[in-house]
Image (tube, rainbow, N blue to C red; front, side):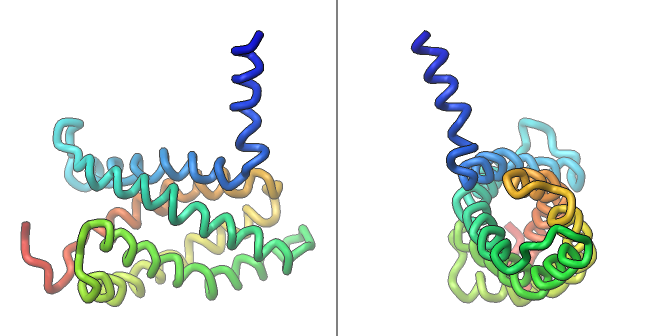
Length: 186
């Protein structure tokens, strides 16, 4: 009986703490995306996977991207209370202009910092990769977020975006793996 009560309490945590649900999703999805990207581009076998890179993706996704995204969703929900197509499109457009470039810069800078790069190397990576990434994101994310804001309930938005993020994060992993102009081959 006690074990059943403990399992029930454990199951209710994501409902009580929705940011935790997003963090768990990102902790699983982001390293899987890193591994998927390696496999797609290099046909990497399980023995050749860059596990430290996958761990960085999991750590950054869970502890940095998910809480920031959760905060953004909670904040932006206050300004867009209607649940109609026009409101969903407006919300997605505003997110694409305001949140998206900052999130991409945050990603490239943060992941570079986790790799131990210098401040100038982190800034240079943002400069080189932000615009090409943003151009793809400006097509992908408005479609995803319009669906998200229009069809998905508030409590499931982080999970829905986590699923859409799988595709996007594979692309981010691809962009992250591109060598900077001033990088020396390792």
